Length: 91
Image (cartoon, rainbow, N blue to C red; front, side, top):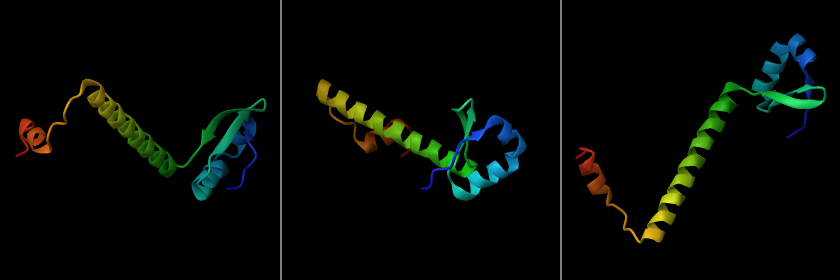
């Protein structure tokens, strides 16, 4: 992965199409800077979709870990999948 220099806001205004094309082609964020400080990034919509999927997966993993921890603390037993399906009317 090659680091690319940040793009100033004024340059981004002038070269938006090129910046979008670069983000889509290289699958790397293009950082937009104001007074030398990064304030935004342009990424492809495909990359954003993947990031959102990964964030959702991580949230699920954390929720499962929390549920397992709660079961250990309360000494609860897991509910069998067949019972869950029956409760939801899926059988």
